[in-house]
Amino acid sequence: MPPSANPTSVIILAAGLGKRMFSSLPKPLIPVCGRSMLFHILDQVSEVAPQARVAVVVGHQKETVIKEVKAQNFPLEIDFIEQSEQKGTGHAVKCVMESTWGKETVPRKENVLVLPGDLPLMQADLVREMMEPLKRGSAMKLLSAVLPDPHGYGRIVRKGKQGTVLRIVEEKDANVRERMINEVGVSIYTFNSAFLSGGVAGLKNNNAQKEYYLTDLIALAVTKKRTIETHIWDNSEDVRGVNNPYELAQAGDILNNRVIKKHALNGVRFVCLNSCRVDPTVKIAQDVTIYPNVILEGSTEISGGTMIGHNVFLKNVKVGKGAEIKAGTYAEDSIIGDRVKLGPYAHLRPESVIKEDAKVGNFVELKKTTIGAKTSVAHLSYLGDATVGAGVNIGCGFVTCNFDGRVIDGSRKHKTIIEDNVFVGSDCQVIAPITLKKGSYVASGSTLTDDLEEDALAIARSRQVTKPGYAKKLRG
Image 1 (cartoon, rainbow, N blue to C red):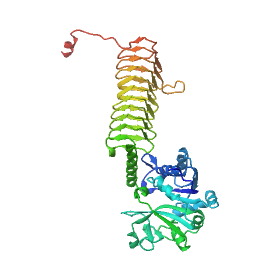
Image 2: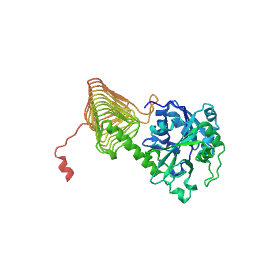
Image 3: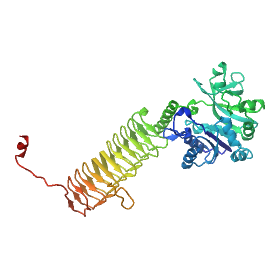
Image 4: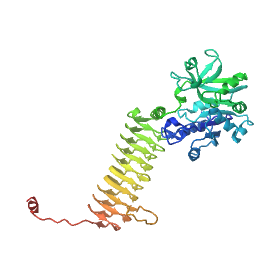
């Protein structure tokens, strides 16, 4: 669907302490399925109304929240409004409406959508529905849901079973009869901006929590005989809040299942749906096969025809067409070319590149290293700060010794350059900085300290000494 053009501004409440989360992170930045809760919400708003004016209410660790949101470069026009004391949702919105942002909203005759900052499962359709214009004369529209277990939520009190809404009663203030109601408010509202501005200015804190409740505006609208629109949201998953680590894990499972379902319906084959974790930001082409216990995070992109084996972890990795990534491989911030065979149990540290048709085998570790096309590093090797050309053979047990405690040209790690068509035998080391020129050959067991010229052979090992019959003497 096209983005909404409705003149609706957005307030996101993200100032809470989140004590029950037991996290050093501010609650809005706690990740769900690899992305902060607040970012999930801003993603949905961006999809529906990319030019919307958004006020994010900040408080606890406000500098961190502001910095992280700005780093995401959302298309939205985002302002940050501080709530220095956490005195409830009504107080948070009052802080916004008394700010320059709020004072500009009323003359524009905009509606104001209020969203909590801890609903990471909210989807774009919900935002689109709540951004629909209010009817003439309406003070507000509220979203509700019917839950089998409404514990912890404010209850919707209506006039009769299906009558107009009279008020929302927070659970701590509800009587026994009200607690039996299973229609709940989900803290999502769209307000007429003039009604909102005047309403929050007159809020009182006459309740068990001694807080200013935004829900009290419902009773105010009833008193003023203003229309309250209601919408019962059928998919209660979308409006599940996150208030403790258990609910965080539940939300992660739900979001992960949505992501995997989307990819599976678009042509990705998951051998076991329930065992894999895939961030919403990951891109996977058709005709990719993914085996159990795979984790794909961040900006990872996987091209068509690729096979991802058991227990593979990829973060911010680009994988070319027809690649085969075998079991137990771990890679981050790297590029894997077309038809590469990687693993099992390979480790790519950041800034590693493997070009097309290359092979990097079991127990090979790369760090800031480029492996050229059709090159083979089959097993048990470490290459750090190295550039390896095309058609190179690296034997078993090869090590680039890239650190000796010195600083050369401002770098503590020294570079190894291995040009095209070099052959390196098993159990060799090179002491960087060093260059092995095109077509050169390194004999097994060598430790090289000097550059090797083109097409030269290097042998850097002790000569074998054989003493006939000496073994018998050793055995006594």
